[in-house]
Amino acid sequence: MRRKKHKNKKKQELFEEIEKQELAEQELAEQETKQLNEEIEDPEFRSFFQDVLKKFPQKTSTAIMNAFATSKGKAEQLVTNSQTQLDKVFDEFLAGVSPDVKKKSHQTIHFAALSAAIIGFSPIPFSDAFLLVPVQLTMMSRLHKIFGQSWSESLGKSLTKELVVVSLGKSAVGNILKVIPVVGTVTGGMVNASVAVAITEALGWVTVKMLNDGVDIFDDVMSFKGQFSTLFKAIQNAKKK
Image (tube, rainbow, N blue to C red):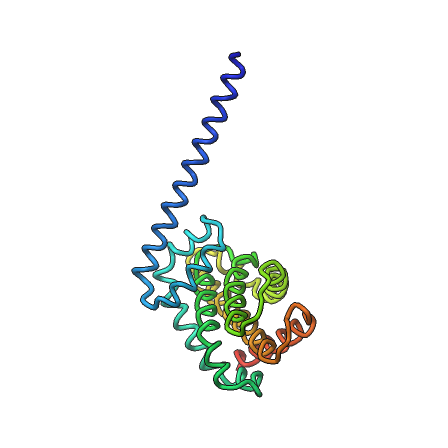
């Protein structure tokens, strides 16, 4: 009888602990929402970034938000410089795509690139591809919606993670620099954020091109990978000039 009471007590304590943890996470989420409302004036970007954060574990989204005020300013400057540098690359890649299609897709890709840069500048390890995948999934699902096409979250996650892993492999030096005190945070963050923006913009515009051509990216994965590789290399070459 005592053993049964002891087990019941343990179960009750476990349930209470889980409940406390859930309440704590809920409070953190509410604090993050309040912070986003205060720090992001554009409601459309706020909505995009909130959707990205929802795809992260609470601990990760909290770390991103703790550095948000500092990361956002750096990210905005990086994305602005990147767009100036890469306009010609994207114009050549998107030859045949109407200005109207490019215009309606641009905002989504811009929000994604900015989100990726903010995460890249956050003081958290950037070696795991999962840190970029939520951005890509949010971007690609919204682009599919713009074109009125169906979207598979599970297939999208598998595809984007594979491409992000391969691309991030080239930024390993950024991860090493980032963990070095004083020097690493800024230098490594710049390397990682820059690569994050390049990957995001390449994935975004390849998605737009294929959707515009009436091609289902999941039916023609090899073409998607090939076009992504081509555009990503063109971006890297342009950044070296």
